[in-house]
Structures are given as C-alpha cells and as structure tokens.
Amino acid sequence: MSLVVSEVNKSFGQGSSKKHVLKDISFTGKEHEFICILGHSGCGKSTLLNVLAGFSAPDDGSVTVNEKAIKGPHRERGVVFQEHALFPWYTVLDNIAMGPSLEGLSKSESREIASSYLELVGLSDCADQFPNQLSGGMKQRVGIARALANKPRILLMDEPFGALDILTRETMRKELLSIWLQLKTMVIFVTHSIEEAVHLADRVLVMKHGEIALNKEITLERPRKSDDSEFISISKELQSVLETIESTRGVS
Ligand SMILES: Nc1ncnc2c1ncn2[C@@H]1O[C@H](COP(=O)(O)OP(=O)(O)OP(=O)(O)O)[C@@H](O)[C@H]1O
Image (cartoon, rainbow, N blue to C red; front, side):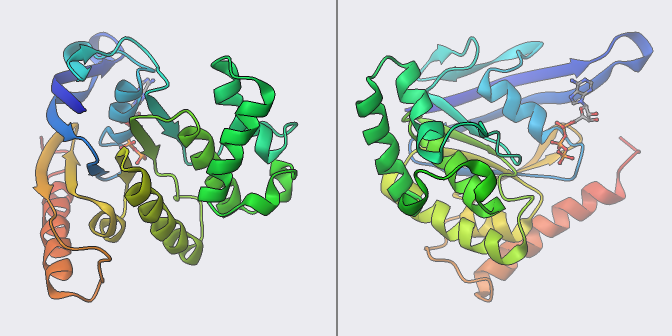
C-alpha cells in the first residue's frame, strides 16, 4: 500500500485576493507509516488533509493510493476531526455501526464489528450510552472507533486531540499508538505540537507557508521518552525549523 502526493498546488479566491495555500507539495507514505504534519496555524495543514481525504481537489498535481488517483472521499481513507462529529440521537454503538451498515452489512453484523472496535478503544461499557453522556476524550475515542470500523487503509486525523486537556491528550496519544501498533494502518496526523509529533511519528513533515520545509524520518524506538537525548535533539531540530518559519513570516 502506498500513498504518493506529487506536486500538489491549491489556491483559494480569485484575482488580487487569490491565496496560494499549497505549493508543490510532494511526499510519499508507506504501508504502516505514521506521518505527522506539523506547522503553525494557517500554513495549510488542514487544506492538505482535505485534499488527501478527497473532500477538495487540488488545482494541479496528483494524489494516488496504490497508483490509483483519488477522485473523492472513500472508505479506504478514514477521517477523524478535532470536533467529534457524532450523531447525538444514536447510541455509541450505533454511531460506530453506521459505516459497516451503510456498506450493506446487516444490523447484527454491523453491531458486532462496532463492538470489536469499541473494545479496541476501551469503551465497551459505554455501548448503549449517548454521545452527550461522554467526556471529550471518550467522544474522541468513539470518533476513532467509528473511522476504524470502515477498515480504512489510511487514517487521516486533523488535530484530533486539540480540544482535550493535557493529561487526556497524553492518554489518547498512548492509546492511539497502541491501536496503530495492532492495526498498522497508515496514519496521517496533523498537529501543532512538536512533542506530540516526536512521540508519534515515523516521519514528520514540517509545513512552511504551504510548502514542506522539512521531511524528517524518526527512527527512535517506541515507547519514546521525552527526556531521552535523541528525543530532545529531534525536538530542537523541529523547533529551529519552526522558528525560522516564524522569523521569515510575511517575508516570503
Ligand atoms: N475554503 C477556503 N476558502 C478560502 N481560504 C481558505 C479556505 N480554506 C483554507 N483557507 C485559507 O488557507 C490557509 C490555510 O488554512 P488551513 O486551514 O489549511 O491551515 P492550518 O495549517 O490547518 O491552520 P490551523 O492550524 O489554524 O488549523 C488559511 O489562510 C485559510 O484562511
């Protein structure tokens, strides 16, 4: 399984208000790879993720999965957003069962699949609850289980833990890693946080004004420790690229 993003450009607006948001973005994703897209607010991370999801088409360039051009959203690419878009009138189990059921599986088969993913995210006891009875972290786990129930080959995550408090965020990070180690889906994870990126990623793409300023492979063994000397040195390298970006803002 491979993802190839080749010279993708994307602009918004017309004439003098035209904004070139993605500029010649190219990278590849391998099977089982965990890729983090790191960058300041407004650098184009969500725009890139939307292109990968197929929600929005690039102006030029191409995105292929297993050498096939993507032509729109597809269940092979699951999406998890910062705001967990769960259906409030469905139970937790039925929120997750929705994907398999839309694929034509029977209600009982869909619920069986949903139960297995609910177990994977540690929420089996909440199957019959409604989303408004859950904490933010629990809702986010349901969002992840719902995306996984479609058995995506690529999981696209747009700052999924951004709205969570720091402790919940750390727990979720560990849980996501353990799920990824079991399922080995390719993950593309957008974040503002250097620490989150170094904990999670096999590869970090640092974005600068719509371009990839650094494409860095991280081979540190897992679980990673933030006081490990190599962890600190990689974090400093990413920080220095981001600071360069900060100091050149408005100049390019
Ligand atoms: N549909 C749109 N129409 C016009 N401009 C847009 C649209 N979507 C994004 N933009 C602009 O593109 C730029 C990049 O936005 P994007 O949401 O991709 O950034 P981001 O890096 O994800 O930021 P954040 O971290 O704050 O979410 C911004 O200047 C934004 O205003």
